[in-house]
Image (cartoon, rainbow, N blue to C red):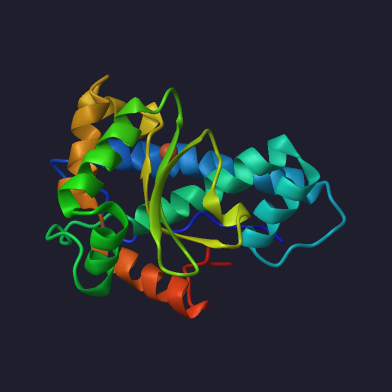
Length: 211
Ligand SMILES: [Fe+2]
């Protein structure tokens, strides 16, 4: 099958001044589009048909097919990243997700401190993920390059921050700390994270890449 570049769930300029329309248009229309185009070209050479992007990512991981994995996982990760951003979800986590953060990290401040330390301290390209295990325990993990927690069936991602320079260089130059701080305090889509958390607890309903 051929996968399509999903539309952004908001206007390209909706996240200004924290992420510019130019960054969003480049990130979505150039970077994300290229991963999907490259993946489709690789899949076109194969006889086996996959019914979902999640299945392609798992297949590539099992086969240790680095070229397919890098493009498929980046296609999925970016689709998830767009959902992790919001122009109007700036009040922080609430409800049972807030309680889970308190349980797992001790306090919201401790969560923010660990997220900033991992996001800023991550060397080179990658992603900062907030994930839940099946018991509802949360953790933060910074993964390199295209790596994604969906290769671990015991984990459900709740939010992700793109740490590749293409995510922030136009707006923040080399100042990744300011970008990570903006993500955590102005952009993180806590409503989406809450829905993902409920899916993690119930074992169904987690976000999937649209086909
Ligand atoms: Fe990216």
